[in-house]
Amino acid sequence: MSMLYHIVTYGCQMNVHESEKISFILENMGYQFTPNREDADVIVFNTCAIREGAEERVFGNVGALKKLKKSRPELVIAVCGCMTQKEETAKLFKQKFPFVDVILGTFNLHKIGEYIAKAKNQKVFELWSEGELDEEQGYNRSSGKNAWVNIMQGCNNFCTYCIVPYVRGREHSRSVENILSEVKQIAASGQYDKITLLGQNVNSYGKDLSPSVSFAELLRLVTAANGDFKVGFMTSHPKDLTDELIEEIATNDKVLKEIHLPAQSGNNRILKLMNRKYTREHYLSIIEKIKSRIPNVKITSDFIVGFPTETEEEFEDTMSLVEKVKFDGIFAFMYSPREGTVAAKMEGQIPLEVKKQRVNKLLALEKKIQKEAKKCQKK
Ligand code: SAH
Ligand code: SF4
Ligand code: F3S
Image (tube, rainbow, N blue to C red; front, side, top):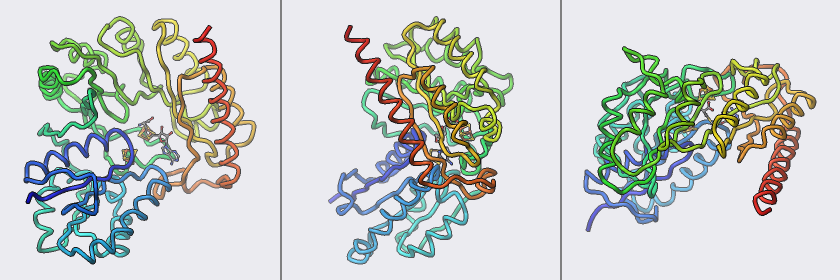
């Protein structure tokens, strides 16, 4: 009988895609996927550290496996991803859940097969503090007709609330050759009608390559591959969204007319405290440009409410920005302090009750906007 594996994935598309890599590695070792963790010989948790809630879910779900492991000691449990890349959290895992067999971070993820094999005889606890992008390109793609393609790793922006730069390292662009060879393979397979290019801030793609390559140029090169597919991308940072890129999206038939452009706040003082490096006015001017140049474009965004010291009036600036832009969709998050980040140490942390009120108010506004948009479509 063949050995079975199960993966639980938390967090962003980057993690979803990395779980496709884990799955590829395990299947090459002879494991087969099972949707039931109770039946699995190996269970992998690919974790996210972006907010406290995400971490609590992981702790709860890993903790719940204690019984299963007791009844089947040969079961291998591995925890990897952004949460365990933080040394303190990794140590906490080791201490709280001694039955976990493998703990690794984001930089040594490609070693997971080796570690799981080792774990039959010993516990493995290994975090690398940095590493190169693994460009082996082995993925067991699992997102239907969409194929994810990672174009860069890490982030240099250090938004003061965000843990990502600490757990994913600095920006590192993948070479154009490697990206194109993966894209050509995907296109040639004929199985996908969409390719989504992934990075924490795709607009700064290629700045670290020599010669440098802009993201707009990369889009041109990727869409030049033969095949019937459209190209999407995420995420864009407003500070780096160039006219060249808007022009490319507007004129290139193969590029989807969809932009996820997180604003985070509509208030200049808060944007500055967040270290976002743009103002409300600049954000709105980009939106204007995009809307006038790309008809029927879909724009979505992310917002954080209750950032330290945010007043009611400053929150209202976020409300008015959302009202003004009329996004096609937004994600609204309550600010969650992340240990090690600048904002976590700021004075003026906002009480949970206030954050809840604000997030509900923002989501109610978004709902109203969506309802009105639907009515307009029907007319
Ligand atoms: N690289 C992307 C997205 C990163 S994380 C970008 O720069 O936009 C996805 C979203 O999670 C962010 O856009 C932000 O809205 C939210 N987020 C990040 N850190 C957070 C925190 N500490 N508390 C609440 N939300 C957070
Ligand atoms: Fe986090 Fe900011 Fe980087 Fe996005 S751009 S990953 S929010 S630090
Ligand atoms: Fe979470 Fe890591 Fe993505 S912290 S949002 S899984 S980069």
